[in-house]
Length: 161
Image: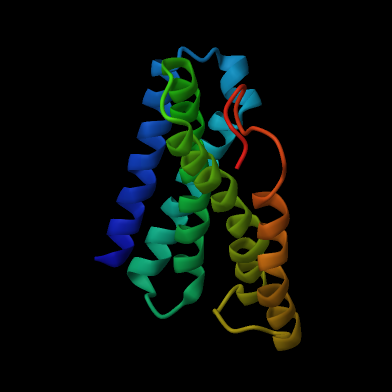
């Protein structure tokens, strides 16, 4: 049930991304530039694979990691258009900052932790090189910190984190 719930969360976030892009009146080029399109595709494709693995092999961490990676990308895809709408409609700055912070901090965990660990655990869920796995787990927060604290707005005139 947890796998299905996480999959539904990713699908819902991608639906928010698509409807948010329409509500923000984003052109295709703007949606591409803000990574809404690519993050939505990634945010849907990883969970499709992850839910199948987690459903049939719940003890194998690869499926759960793919679900987590997809949710990270889908979260960013969903929030970018919402921030765009918020800037246009004059939402409160603290809310826009909070949305920007979540958007900035969600995808780095996917690419810095989940995907490298998936590759290291493939195919049976057991690491071949334990030290490499530990190095990945220990350095992933540094990557997330670097990407999450990057100065500047995420979208147009949105406030920085």
